[in-house]
Image 1 (cartoon, rainbow, N blue to C red):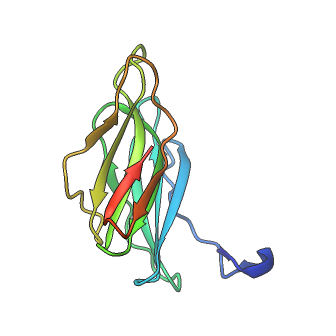
Image 2 (image 1 turned 180 degrees about the vertical axis):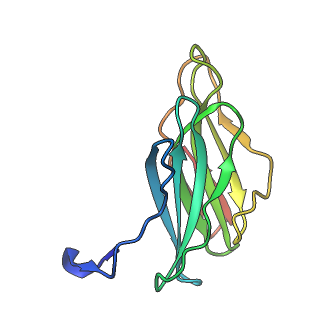
Amino acid sequence: MGVGGGGALVGAAFTIASVIECDEEAPAVAYDAPHDEYLVVWQEGAPLADIWGRFVPLPTGTLPDAFSISTSGASEEAPDVAYGAAVGEWYVAWQSKVSALAPYDVKGGVLDAEGVLLNDVEALATATQHQIGVAPAYDPARSRYLAM
């Protein structure tokens, strides 16, 4: 279900994720205007969460399957996503914690239009203290992403 101008609900409700054994939390979404689709990302599972995604084409009909973005064995949480229209790619960033006593780091990776990770997951921010709260953005003039 979408939300139109003035906040009116548009279309029928549909399910993005529904794994009975665990929680799906912290969703984020970005829009690809040239292909008229969204990418929704979320964390799934506990105590070690993974990052998952699902494309939502418009008009919403049959949804493609959800896919894993990162399942490293660390607790990966609070993802966010940006779309790079000039390059047709998505950038997903999240916070990652390898153990209960370790600080959170920020990691991220580039996905192609099919949801395939194009690079190794990169550590974007690491320190002896927590690095939390990610927010990626795309700069079309320079054809690059910034994640904070």
